[in-house]
Length: 378
Image (cartoon, rainbow, N blue to C red; front, top):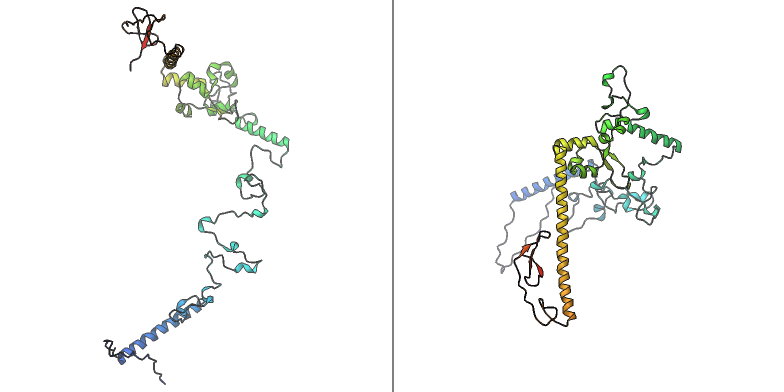
């Protein structure tokens, strides 16, 4: 049994429209259209069967819905429970089964913010200072890190003092941690460079590379005393880059005795500083003394020049002020060069300008009265 395909009747063209009516389709064209429609339907059925086999609902597939043009989809078609886990949507309601709807619990963080700490501010202590306590911030490693300077809770005071003593002895290579001496291999033992004793200060040997005993350090203070960084700069005219170079001049650090919060002192061995300053930098002790005297003379000259310039400025201000006061006291009186008795005027006859050897400023005097003035050249 064959059913005829429904067809829309063609529009009837009016006689006055001027449009030629479309010719009806031929049987061959109708057959071709029907074959294409059946192929498209078969492809759609195959796609739906494949989707059903994978377990995915066809409601989200717009191709599986036979909707006419302009028709809206149902709400169940767009809001499904099979939302992907990577979708950051606060309206998802899987958590409704466990104690109410909380959208913030279900929002997944972005990839760059997966490592974060969530704080419950309702359970935290308000310190009124803008910081959190140790109990409220268990994820802070800096707060929970053990402090090496504080006594642990599991140790008594006597045990802590013993621990600190052993720590200091270990750092100084002293006491039970002192290096052993071999009787069989005497040539390998380090001896004092002055007296040949085996009682060598191992810390000085490690830092300065100087094997010397404590007795020789006390006997020869001119050679084995320690110099501060300031003394090395002022007495031997060394620079900061030279003093910071540990290969050139090794140094020993000690806490600052003036204030504990200041930088540590840098102590240098006297004979090493003198060897570098005399032999490498200046060449000899005499050259160092000459350089020191030259710097001192230049410093003194700069100080004198500064004092002279200040003195000249003070003289200028004093002269102007004295002249102004004399004018005010005399009621506008005389001018510069008037005689004291105001009966006659004196005209100065200036001589030749000479240079003052003390100040280096030109001075010229009056031939008649002997008055001298300083002359500045600009």
